[in-house]
Length: 144
Image (tube, rainbow, N blue to C red; front, side, top):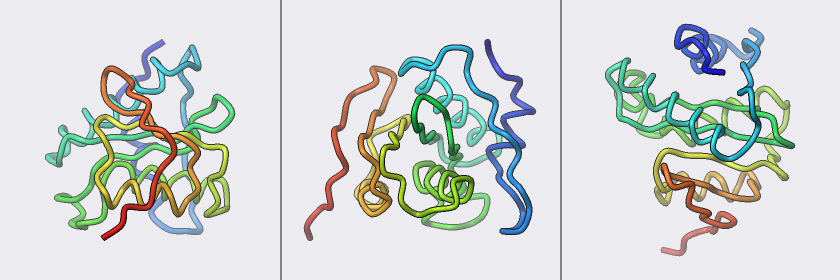
């Protein structure tokens, strides 16, 4: 099952304010790594359609997508609005916690040091990235 881009565009944007409820995330027909990375690439396409950098990510907990992120670095403009950080923000808002223990992140590219550090501080358990679904392991806090 492929989700309509219009539905994804709404859910990937998130609410306008903290009080506004986020639209429900449409789940893939199959809940496996291939479909989760496919959704991350759908987020990437949305970023490109909006005129932003080609990055996207999703956060998964217990086989369910709980956060989506579309790069917003250029269109927001916000230098920290990488796809991974936006997915972390979305998941934290939806779950009502900054502790994303037990979650995995699926990203279209290897997370940069800022994004990996955000994954570390959010306590994300594992990172997967790229079309080959490379297992990046647990996030590490890069030293300076």
